[in-house]
Image 1 (cartoon, rainbow, N blue to C red):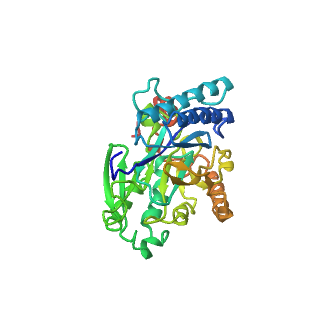
Image 2: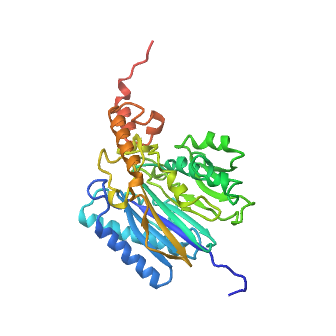
Length: 376
């Protein structure tokens, strides 16, 4: 090893819906057993340093640490093989939608563009490295726009932006245009209004990464937050399920404190997805045990697992939303659920027509098409 060389850690979340139990509600324990077995072998063979397997709704979530960097073939191949083996078990059990997120038959180096969601970051560990893994079900990547903005740019959420010199200068947001496949980096607070002009349109513009500024003591090239941005309909060309994004956020020591990170999820803000990927509803922060999407296949859920990271090794996770401090948010989300459900098939509960293009609605419209007559 060269003198002065500092090992970087890669924190990866790879997730997929490989079969629901029952319907779209949750993940069968046998699928988690397969994942745990596969990842344990990968630790022994030193492909991984550490791992944790969990689920959110009907999504199997693989949390992994390693030193291979993002998009590493050996890590993505491991995840792909795990999802494929879990899919076979799901088919044996007759689970719903077995393998629905696996949209290709041939692994070609990494999972990107093959269906599963990916949130990975490579960084130099600090003396103490708190990391939060967020996982959502029944919604889309843009669901992260609001809380990530609150965490890293809103002083009413994050007191450190005002009173902590180490993050007082703000952060850099990398925003992706997922329709035109472009991206832009915007500085906050200077370009906050430009940022909001984009990410308020959450079905098109999504926050992909957040970086420290060059004035920070943290490396400006190493992200402090990363969100999965895979859009299943863009890969499959039709509706095959909602994207169910995941995100990784680092906290403390020049970054928002853990409590400021979690505060970004205290509203139960409206997101798109829910039943058949076609409705707006509140994002409910819940404990892992409550991440079962039942009422109208929802409402959309988010879980948060907190880890301390040391040389790539993970502590036992802390189930951060398993806390009565979020009870009021959950109750309010249930009131919002009642209100939105009373709209039935009417907007704004149902998504606007332009967002329904890749759902099953166009098939209904096609059948009605010949019956439309020109209006004089």
